[in-house]
Length: 375
Image (cartoon, rainbow, N blue to C red; front, side, top):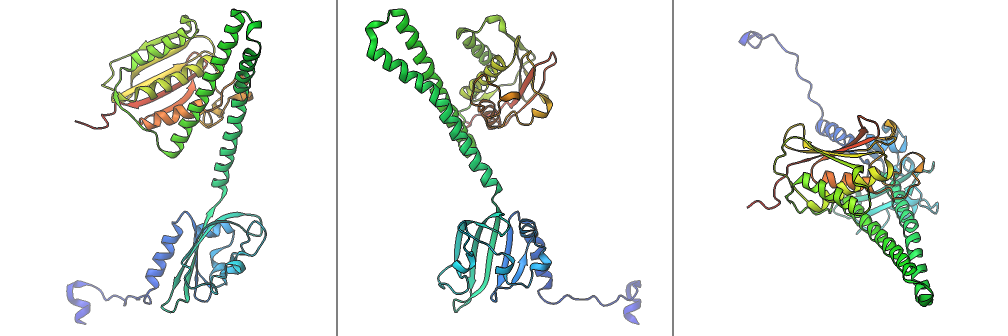
């Protein structure tokens, strides 16, 4: 009675205490379901004691039906030659010195490819007390391999034409030098020079793609006059033969002090202008202004061509994108992918939309930045 009266509290039913270890097992199961990779754990008798949500998703086997079964029946994995992988591996009968197996590509009976790793836990006698299998979806790696194959194919195709030209004209000049007049020789040498520049440009693009994908882009920041950089790039286009009235430059507002990598900014602007001239039409307008927060700069490059369909806007910055119809006017399809990587390396962002007067508008923003090594 005293317990019911003290503090004015009503009697409470005794709290049910879960069996020892039950709470921790429940927490562990919840945590394993948060893993992005599939996890299958078997005990010393090869019975499945853990089968997380990712494993169920990859194998199409409900966790409830997997628990308690022999893991070799749950995961009947085979190698590329069709051999039963567990018979080859013999995890419970093999050498007691084994601790893990490196990642390997294996297949379920339906043909689903998985990347599989495994690890052992042994007791004091070296007997397997727990066998853990980790599963990863192989689709992402397959996409990467296809992208690499596409890159190799594109590079081979793009290199073949200029190298054939260089070889042909060089061999012709060496064999028949005295048969050509000076104007003919000059035309041939100019063609060789232009094709050599094309090869150099392609190799530079490939190196940039490699650095972007591996995260090894080096930034060498310094104070950059962004409007002056734009004027310099436009002047370079005019000097290369583009008509001066093809370009218009607008500067709005006052920019903060911009710490950028000048070479990469030149590359960004050069690629965007090249894209606008090659694929657009009419006047190419470049506008520089402070960004929305007045903490950086925004640069827009507009043309007056057909523009980019809204449904293609998300694909523009992918590797090998060439626009509707494959865009037969040259290029590797890497330029805008590189531009996006260089802008993001500055901490900025880039997007594409329809320009106010038609055509495409590429707009990128970059923060003001800071010195790499403050003094």
